Length: 133
Image (cartoon, rainbow, N blue to C red):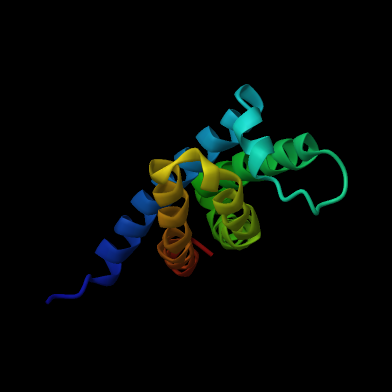
């Protein structure tokens, strides 16, 4: 197996940053366009209305995505993405509880999403390491 050269690793990281940034901006906007599904997975144990957390996480996702898209803020955006992926993990765990009665496809989808946090975090760390300083 060949390893990537530093130049190709940086180019790959830039592509990853752009894809991750676009995905996060899109998901952030979706929190505002269609907030109800996000409201349902906010843990009931959190104080205040679920909509607050839906909108706050939408702002966080869109802002993080925007930082990843801009080379000057990519490094900070990558760290923000790591924090975001760790921060939404409790909601993803809660979604299993919420979706459990919705049938097997919903169960499988919500359970399968949990291990995806690990490569998302590692990719964000790779973007951080290769971002312009």
